[in-house]
Image (cartoon, rainbow, N blue to C red):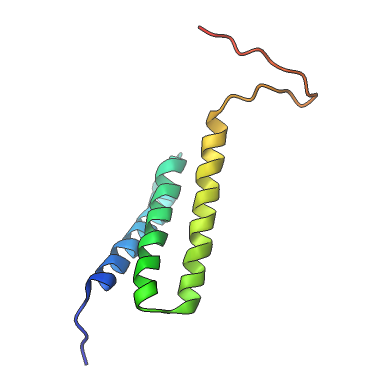
Length: 99
């Protein structure tokens, strides 16, 4: 018995491709860009979530929630690492030199 693919299944397959692509990128890259890695994972999780809302599979839906949360954490961590730290461990302020 074959079931034709609806738009939500296609969206789910695109999400799957995003997550597999992000994993492959992480594996083959010497120094992966965290924005590409976590952004692609977040996109994949979001697309799979759309598919899973229509074609409900609760364990997979929970997995995508955690996958998205970890991706958001990774993006926030990457964004924070770009902001210059103006305090040392002793709590004294460092001056940021403007050029």
